[in-house]
Length: 264
Image (cartoon, rainbow, N blue to C red; front, top):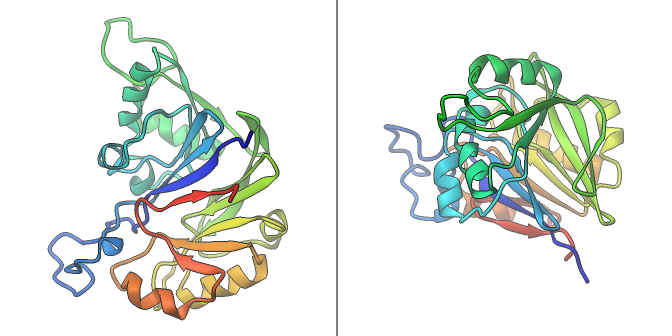
């Protein structure tokens, strides 16, 4: 029997989403639903378990829109607002899962920052009976096992900040997720060798100090040579329908709600 290994894009937008507040550009006014981009997040199923990658300010909307049924673990790539400011909404899954304590994995600095931002979060129920998330924060720097999968943090540069992507190997298939990146070190490129599906940041065509451009993302996609590469964290500079024909057959722009079956 085939064991489920899927990934769904809950959001594919940059830090301000698309459309932008107060913007009347052609992309922000587009009627193509693939141009509507909530803040970037990925939902991965590993058999009967589910891993949420990043929890930005659109998390509640994303869970309702895509009917997310459960969250058994969370991985936070870095501490920017568009990746963590919806984290409190994870508490609903504690309730749905009979007060299950949900582990949250991230690099040590990110975990320390999460504890500063959310000082009320604990793995123990609140003594006053308040409705708060039940989270076990777990700092990771090396590969670890989660629900039968091997999860490897991937060190990348996001401007001057060192952040994490991750690689997931499960049932003979592999997925890598790098949503916020400007430079991928050689050691990380080696860790990406042989990955089946690569999900990579591609902000726009013009240069940016903390994100990859179309040209840079295509160069990395060629180096990594995954079976399939999807671009995410897209800005309002890009129409989905215009960018898609410019890409090689092995590369595609992602869109909100797109679901990948890693076993296919």
